Length: 302
Image (cartoon, rainbow, N blue to C red; front, side, top):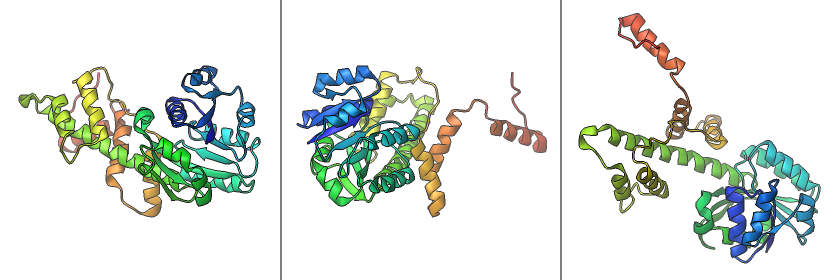
């Protein structure tokens, strides 16, 4: 098949390359002209503009968007829609809010353009290992593009699934990332507890490696933890500052809307908030209250 790929960052560029390796024709575009030029190294056909990219694709066209969620996605969809024809398809592989996806799908349906949301997981390793694809969209439209999904997935029969109608792919990816938050937090807490038991002088990289084989807690995330600890056992090169992306917040909000308790995911998100605070006000107020009601000692700042 042939595909237009908009966005050649760490994910988009590698996905385009995997598709070319798999025998597909990929016309690439990015605002970064250097990225477009570099795509020729793996066989991508660089386009100088969105108009140029669209003109090189045969009907019915398929255009995959890999740009940041929010306004960048909105702007690209608005712009590319003006260049497409009925029967063409837009695929959004970014981490968009599923409600935005449903709204966009309804708008594009009025123009007879298929919209497919693809929750995509695999990170920078996807080029060689393949991507997990959670696809939402019209069944017929998704079926037409299955050769693309089969190539991107780890295997034609593994790692790809149409999970439901438009919006279902991004909803599934939202939950996926919430689970990821919880798993990462559990590993972080476990290894912090091991590190705190100084009299045992635990070899954390060795323990991570041991858990990676045969243990019920083994996972790719644990493999990555083992690599990080091997490179820097004390993690002295890093600050305890953890950012969060929108999916974790959206998952927690959705749990409120549906009255579904997700305490692990919620607390893992809250832990990220706390990691970004220095001498948080709430902690200082707790100290003040203990001092006020019980005369407990406090540590003075400065």
